[in-house]
Image 1 (spheres, rainbow, N blue to C red):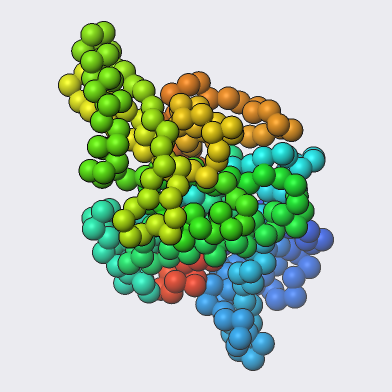
Image 2: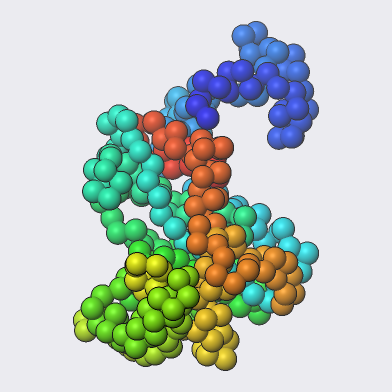
Length: 337
């Protein structure tokens, strides 16, 4: 997870075999101090972190530069190659998280929600596959850059799978008109959380009262749904379909909302919320037109993309962004990805 680990790992013949080295023991290295080490040392990788494509050919010490566009494409290619045949439908889950900083890294910014200096990386997953890991400074909206990444990823997927239906899913931090309008223009479905407000809560008034009465009668949580059309006063460019979940827990109201461009024929209100939106818990994998795992109704309030992010940060050390520059830290994020 840090560059100095490579000074031990560079001796590993199995790793040398996996990356295509012929000299698996390093005994044929030209320099005496490199013999016995088939792989690169931390100094070489440090040059890769610091090297710039525009100057690498003329720089004496930093002649290696990372091709970030190629690494972006690689993540999507690995996803595409994991399927024997194109699926009929895939879901892309978007999320942002904090990457705490403990130094004076480039782009360091204090984030009020996370209460720390951090980066704010954007992740896009499909099931267990990571399709995008974009390091961003924390002075941005959670959805910043999402349209650019979706345009790139969806274009790459459709070049290989032109008939596959694509649907994106995310929480209310990504409920932005630019994202929804792009999806509508490019025939991409979306199911996004929608932050509640007084107008939405009024629209759900009758259903909330019915849920409250049912909860008081049974002593257990009760919920019902409303499917309606809605438009914000200023921020949305058009009217859209909104699903309201009217839920009452013992002693507590819990209304929630999602916005979608899926039609009622695709999914009714309850199915769309409980089985599709809440399936962020453990995201579906499609084989043909069937789920290989269907979530139980109302299951999966914990987010699957959060599970993948925990694997990324806790298991693969994606939060070791301790280099001085944003570009170098993006490279570290690529490696863990």
